[in-house]
Length: 299
Image 1 (cartoon, rainbow, N blue to C red):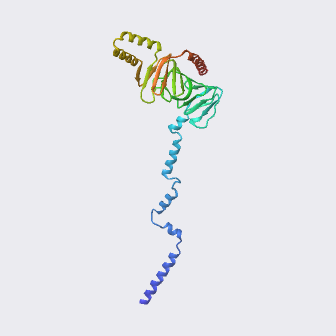
Image 2: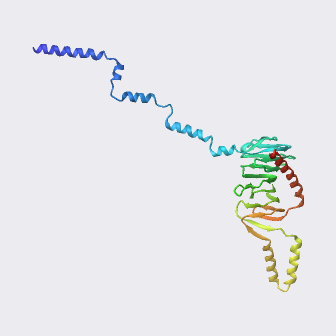
Image 3: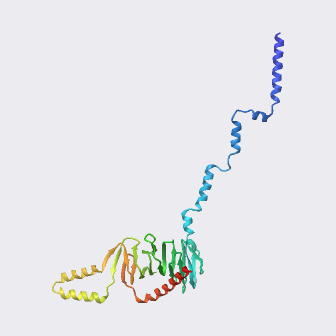
């Protein structure tokens, strides 16, 4: 009986072996623990980009429309007329290209006129700018210009209280809200001639030491008067002359110009005086160019 039991057990084990060896590998995979099929499905549907990569892609796409890019593509005006030769440096590039009448000017562009040449710029607000020969103007934006060298005339249309234009030089910044003026930058000196309106001039650093122009004749007359009145009192006479000098010098954080006047700025020293008549002809030509601009805007 014991032997027959052993025989039956051996037969059962053999049948079980045959049944297991008949199962294929795919069947084993399908009979794995619950949830494994869901894991496989998730793995198959995993996106080709990780979330961080997708975010980077989105960020790189948004960079194309950042304020800096928009500002650089901002149209400021155009070259309405060019007499002679000029170079246009797109967005401040070192290598310039030959400028032509009709060229569009964008923010950060620089226009440089050659010898015996001049250019007329028409801003999008209808203002007119005339560059004389060997002048360089940096158009930083709609409200910001910078004179790098030379002589430039401006006919700026009146602007709102919060939309003033600034013209920067090496030593001062000129605030404008609608006026006609000329700026000349040469030999480390900046001269400003105001034909119409008002402008405010601010130093780049510190304050202005302002010298009021006075003729030699008026100074001599005053000194002579002081000599006569105080010839017996030398100390009082000297004090009087020093007081007179202080009347013609003051220190200012800003200087307001009036029509028909001019200033010369060297470093932080500013001298004001009446505008010479010889500049009237230049402003007459500027007015003619400004009238052409106005007529074009009406067409």
